[in-house]
Image 1 (cartoon, rainbow, N blue to C red):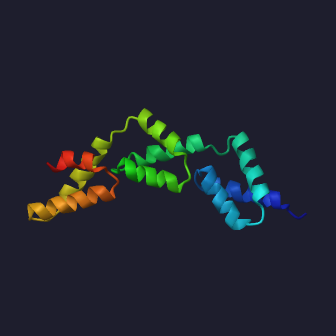
Image 2: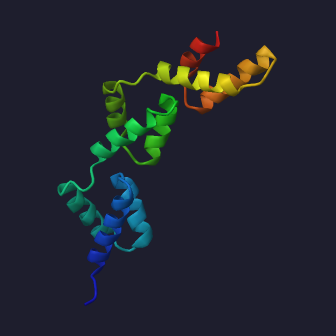
Image 3: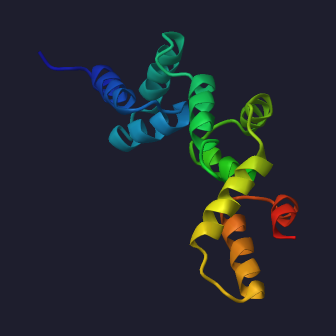
Amino acid sequence: MTKSVKDKIWEKALSKIAVRPQSKNELRQKLKEAFPEEDHLIESTLTEMENLQLISDRNFTEQFLAHLTQKAIGRLKIMVETRKKGLDPDLVDTMLLNMEWSEEESCKRAYEEKMRTLREEDPVKRKRKLLSFLRNRGFKDTVIYKFLK
């Protein structure tokens, strides 16, 4: 018996979420790569999966933020990473505010981490390297300057 396209889309979607949780947008992109002509079936599959609570952007956002906030990265980097996953920026902001996460504490961890490995003798160069490192980690200058004084 031959499988219908709908069945194949379901199988693909289930195999993707079995490996790791996915945002709805992320899953949509992967399904569109595999089934480029089946937009309507993909959307109906995603809606059914949401209704069955197999996928949930709210739950995914919560898990992904818990993962990201364990890293020594700043709010800007978190926003970039969540945007890549297609997550709602307002939901991300709300969840970040409700979490026990402090950008200052995260910056402090990143700063201390870098200071352990930084071998630069010249204080001006050391400060420049630290500033660049912390900016690349997604911290705002106002947060960074608290540690560079």
